[in-house]
Structures are given as structure tokens and as C-alpha cells.
Image (tube, one colour):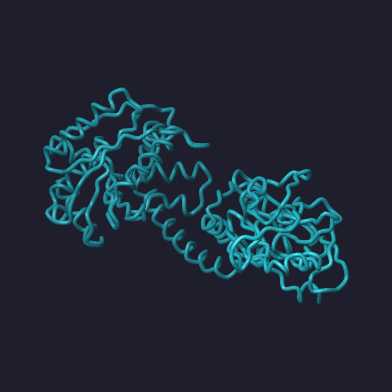
Amino acid sequence: MPFRRIRDLIEAALAELPQTPLLAAFSGGLDSAVLLHALAQSESVRARGLRAVHVDHGLHEESELWARKCRDFTNAIGVELIVRAVDVVRGPGLGLEASARRARYAAIETLMAPGEIVALAHHRDDQAETVLLKLLRGAGPEGIGAMRPLRRLGRGFAWRPLLLLPRAALREYAEYHQLGWIADPSNADQTIDRNYLRMQVMPRISARWPEAESSIAQSAAWARAAAEFIDAEADRALARIQGLDPSTLHFREWLALPTALRDPVLRRWLRALELPEPTHFQAAELVRQLGEAGEDRQPCVRWPGTEVRRYRDLLHALAPLQFPPLDWVAPFDGQPLSLPLDVGALHLQGADGSVRLPAPLQVRFRRGGESLRLSSGGRTRELRDLFQEAGIPPWKRGRMPLLFDANDRLVAVADVWLSEAGAELLAPLDARIVWTTADKGARPGGGHLAIDLADVLS
């Protein structure tokens, strides 16, 4: 009987889960109605704590009526229902369906208690459709692995106990228990890819290959196992080739990785930095440019929100940079000075707080040809040479504030280098220059850009 089949499947899956409450995602459609009803019949589920959430996307004129019907359903089976209305905003490159899904999951995550498990009603037919959609989009093992039975979601987990069951088994259950459910007319819209697959493609495949859905689901399980193995190897590879600065990778070691690891390592690295990931074409272009560029070149591949640049032996990942205008100039008397764009701020820090200079300095950015005599002595050095010897990447050089005196002598490069004249100016004040940037905070004495003068002068 369909009741026993679904009940037994849920009870067996529950035994593998942490002893935490369940939150059932309830659209009111057939699938979620079956899942919620079956959960509500389980004494072990009731003992854990069970509630349901219905997300009203506001995309259909009867959405408020659907919410009332969902409440009637949950009242009848004695389950608390939370209704959340959301505004569906179309994200860049996302269709309405994907944007609604993003809004739905975001709403559900806000309701989750720590460790709580969200029960979702996806079944074997959904899994087969997902695999085909991923294949048509050129996905690798991670995508073809499709939906996991259990995965992290927000502060808890997303759980899909029905993935092994076909849609027909859920319909049998609903008809046996005379459940009422909502028929969303959008499910018949064949302009939506998933609906087209469900209504036009899968029936033809199943007519020729009756076990197709089961076989596709099995392939997804194999792909998932392969993806999890690749994930573990990618974690180890990233730890091996990442630079001391987390935003860097040793590019030769990255290129030398097996093809199956190179892409997942790149994406793991970028996700950890909260940077957008590339398309497969952009990732391939990065590989091509790194392989072809000579040692004296500095290849850069960009996509929206991200730049990946090579300098010497390292790849650097960063958000797209803006550079201050060459004609930007401002006086600096030691009090906090905001620099243009996102370049940060300057101030003088004394032993007892902020300090004022007897005469203001002029702050501007690199124009080329600058030089200074370092405070440690020695000959006058070209700023270009100091940058190169210190290994400061070219894209950082034009964003470092330069301080000049009334005679247009360079006295300081941010808080990294100080000239003899600069040292003489600051010594009586017992003060130092501090350059604060949005991404690194205050870096007294140079922070992550501090340079060992012995290294520069050697």
C-alpha cells in the first residue's frame, strides 16, 4: 500500500538524522501535501516537533486563497503553519522560476532554528528532470549529481526523504487518503524548461525506455559520489597551492592539477573570497592565457564582479578595481583625510592620538617618474624599482597615496616607505602615517604591505 511504502521510507530515513525538529516546506501542491501528511502520521516526527511553512510568492492572483487552503489543510492534521509573503525580484541572469526559488529558500532560512531540518518533497521524477536540465547546461559531476537527500541549508539541513519514489507513488498516496491539493496553473506552462521536460520529453523517453527515470536517478547517485570525492580532493589541493595571502594561488601548481580538480579548486577559492565564479568559457580562457603568457606578461581575465590577475608566481583574485584620477590632489595636515573611491583614508598617529603637521603635505597618486631617498639612507631610488623589488603587484601601485612636501619632494608612499625628509618631519612629532583601507583596516607601520628595508636595499 502507498501509505506503508512512504511511511517506511520516512521512518528509515529519520533514523539516520539528528534528533532535531522538522520544518516542512508546504506549497499546497500534491507532492508537499503528501509529505506533510505522511510526516504528521509519524509518532517519531511528532516527538521531534513538526511545523510547516508556506511561502506566498504573490505571483498568482489566487495566492492569498492558496495560503488559506494551506492553513485549512494543516489545521485538519494538527500542524502549526507559518505563512511568509515574499517579493520576487528577478536576479541578474535568472528567470522567474529561479528568482522565486531563491526568494523562497531565503524566507525559509530566516525561520530555521539552529540544527532544524527542512523537509522538501522532491521525488524521483524531479531528480531525473534535474539531471537532464543539468546535462543540457553542460554541468559536471556536481551538477549531474543533482539533489542530495541531505545537505546543509542555513543554520540546519535540507532533507529530501522521497527522492527514491516516483511521482506516481505520491499520487496513489494522495488519492488513497483523499487529500486535497492546489493545482498551480504555472505547472502547465511549457515555456518553463522543467515543465517542457516533464510534459513533452520524459513521456517519450519513458515510452521507449520504461526504466529511464530509475536509471537516470542511479546515474545521479554515481555522479554525486564522484563529486563528493572530487570535493575532498579539491579541498586538499587548495590548501596545498594557496598563497600566504588567501586571495592568491600558485598558478603553476594550479595549472598542473588534473583537469577534474582545476575547476573545482578555482571555484572553491573564489567562493571563500565571496567573489562571483566564472562561466566555463571564462575559466577556460584563464587556463589558456596562463599557459600562453610569457614570464614578462601579466594576464588578467575578468567577469562581472571578479578579476583574476597573474603577477610573478601567483594568481590574485579581487573585485574589479577603480583607480583614482591622476589630477586628484588634496592637502594633508595629519587629520583624517578621505581618499577618492575605495582607496581608504590617511591620518597621523602620535603617542597620544592624532597629530597635526606644522605645514600641510600634498597627497596625490602615482603619475610616473617618482623617486625618493629612503629614511634608512642610501641613494635616491626610483619608485618603480622599489615597487618591483618589494613585489607589490602593478594594480596596487596606482592606488597607493603619495605624500609630497612644499618643494614637491616625495616624502612618503602611504605607510610603506618614508624618505629621509619625511623621517625628519615626523621625528619631532613622534608620529607615524597610518593608511586605512576598507578591506584591510588600519595598517600601522604598513601592515600587510610593510616592507623590510633590508630586503629592498640588498
